Length: 289
Image 1 (cartoon, rainbow, N blue to C red):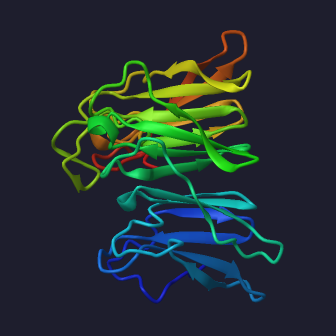
Image 2: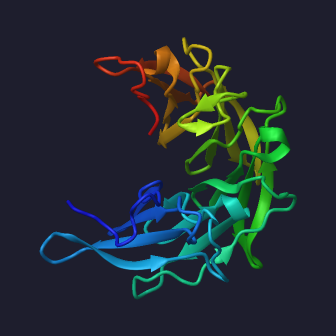
Image 3: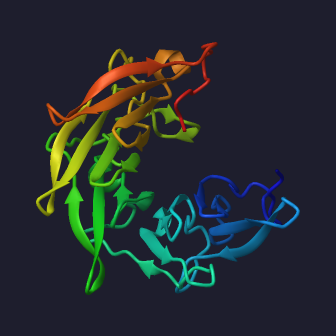
């Protein structure tokens, strides 16, 4: 399969991707001289992929806005983060297969440089937007639900033990009535090729369940045997009752993935195993999905 764009050179094409029905959606955000974009590709009758159309932030795109840096989609909805302008936009697919003009999601207390929209996720009837830079990088997660007045903020999540530099919201995954939030922790240094970030703690993942009309804590997924600085919680995937949590800097940067299964009796996640690359190698970053 060959997928390309006319503007790919040094612009971060492919920094975020999502699949929606038969569409492949790709973000392109790195060039500060142009607004961020997302590209929608469709398969043609001969089996190849072609660019169907390009989208920029609604209401006036700005150069270097980071639009498309975070993406999440299902068959009929798509959410796009533009963290450099503290923005996130929710789109709904129309009957003809195109996307509507988009709805801007508003947060109650976001300040400049909070990076609202850095991570986004679609749930079952709700959407999630994180802001990892808020409160000296302690981070927070905002949850939205549709009502008669449109998409409205339902709650704001942050752990009771929140601390500066925790990066709560670095990764987010959702289930039917579930939100998992990664807080890999960091301090000065270098992480993942970006200056100024280096994980110096093990990290954690926080679970929340929607019960009786509100989001309540369902405990933490703790790292089992992950080394300090492993970045546990940098990435999360969930499928039904199983969760996978990446620690790409564990084992001297070789990386590991910890597995957890939901236990109905205890109403919490329990550790069920750990994955590592067949041939561990420093800098592999296994688990940075």
